[in-house]
Length: 322
Image (cartoon, rainbow, N blue to C red; front, side, top):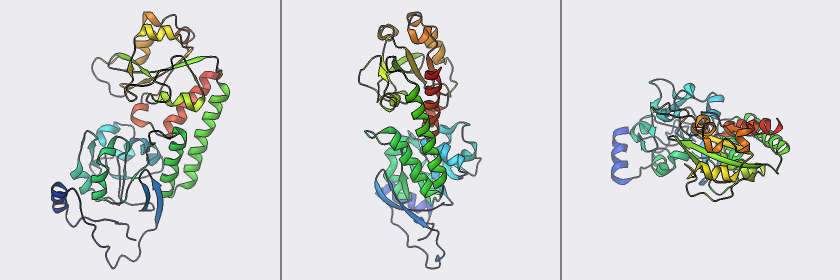
């Protein structure tokens, strides 16, 4: 099988075809392409798919894969540069890496022009999956799936990427590191102490529901945490409205806080630490009084990959142990 599982005959003509029909036809593999690269069959979020091993021209859109791809020395031909900031310079590169835009306004033309052998889609870009498949049938989505156990999903993603990029040993080590961090956090936690997850953004504090709230919500089922407030999520991604008085009434012993705005540096930004520790209504809450507030890394909201969660569980283990 060719490393070019799909090649557009011409970028302009295919772009027109996509616009008119929403689909494209696969070009036959060249007859002289006998020395084809190896392929591997993986089970991504959509089922079984054959893709090239160690593809040369990779477009990666799923931010939950970026740290892994960066650590493994993968180079990209297109990436969502506005989503990357300066976190993964080896992936975002210079002008040689085309800008795929943001998920709200993806640059389909640049993805097409990048002529990829493989597209790593999903997560924020999952709405354009079928358009990506039209450009390159070797498109995979590996981001954690809703309704599935989160730790298993992180490890499944890493395992798939290890198969595709010939990094099986490295993937195994990443998965083991996550398991170790979780095990240590479980061992250090006292279930008599209640925990609440919060999300801050735009100068407001929001509630992250156990098991559902973005980032910090996964801590609860994974570590067996005792919720200070056991209420389902209305908005799992951005958090639910909650007053500081309601937080104080729940009287949590621990707070885990995701600051969604920490990386952006926008005018008027107020850090999560300032919002929580300067709130008069929260001064007598045990978590604040005892300094038992764990703030996620500023980059967490833009990362959310296995390394980010491993660091979060490691931070939880260290905080509980102290």
